[in-house]
Image (cartoon, rainbow over all chains, first blue to last red; front, side):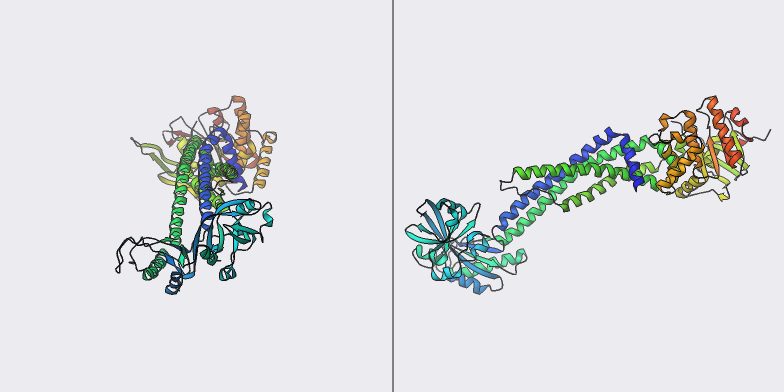
Length: 406
Length: 222
């Protein structure tokens, strides 16, 4: 093995400029592949982070307006969700509905403390909202069942709102804020980048809204769903339950709008796979031009060394050792320069990662060990392919060549 | 050592060329023989056949008791490596390898370890008085030195015969004499069987037996 390596080093060292020029094409191909993979990884990571910030196994339902006349009602009737729907959805589809919760959206109001004030929207929610939105508590706790049951006047603020309202945001927990004219106790502060909502118990929000049993949206967390068909079934069943409660036709798409996050997720996964494949295809084609360059130079090398190969054959080299020498040379050029490409590509990815730390649409555009390994395999195969035809040509060199005068 | 019986060889081109006609030849162990002939006489083809570099059409070639006929490329390579030491007119050293590596190359194809073959190559160079040139590239050596390196390479596998193709063709007369002197010593002191192909009568004179080839036939002894 050491012999083979020193042999290859000698040969490549003979034609440094030519080897380097050929190598640049390989460096470029691998560089492009790594940077493209890094970028697509960045986009995928960013997608995933956003997706994870809102649970994916769920349906979200809003009321709408009917478009088909049904059971004596004319079309164009508004459908408002209410408390009966929560119970019914859960009862009609126990196999798939893991948890059914609801939200009431409040209007914008002024939230103030002696220190400062801000204007914000509040939302009446169930405790499960924290899980669904993956809210990360910075201090205190989220709305709990007791808050809900006792209609407590408690509130959970975003960290940004807390910074506005309190001189020292650490003092927020247990302090009183005024929402409109009513005093609420702050029980929790959550970390956030975008969401500035103020969360209060669902039951409390309903009192603030003036009572009644109106609901703005229902969230159904799903279980036992594995395929798009399962997701569609959950959606259809939910629509049926609501249709029975509100007297609209089950095929009336506009009566309620259902956001099927589960199916959307599956679709996104497909899209990501396609993106990934596209990146590999583009990268490999870029690499191909480099490989052809290597192949070309190996042809030249074999031609130049016809006499040398003849000598080697005359003094006892088997055809196989000639074949493997050319193949190894080709693999050596490809992998050597390939790794330079990996190194440069990773460096650029690292740079981009640093520069885009604050942006949302690319997150951590780096390539991992897995990709480095697959690229290594790609390089070795590519080198073999590049060397194959030149090596076969070298095989045709007869030992008599050694006797021919140059 | 070498027995040729009724060897025929024809090159089939546009016009078939019958280069060797019914060659019968016997060379004993320890002989120093020269094969002489004008260019086109078929002596190079004969050398190719003797060196297992080329096939013959009919006849029988025995080298050190081994029948050389219809060999696979691998077997031919192995026999060349172990039984034949080549010395060429233009030396045929590999230009980017130093003298030591060139001499060691046949052992590389035998799978001898790096350390051992370097040791053996050094020993061989030393015998031919080139120990101090071991790390020099062929380009840095004189013609006579190059041919001695090539000889060391031919000798390193301890072959049955040395086949030399115009070994002095690229050398001046003084160096030619030196190289021929080495051949004679190898033959006399170590009992090496040596076959030299040449068209130079001066070289032929220094061998113990001259075989003349004329138009593809061995001319009767004079």
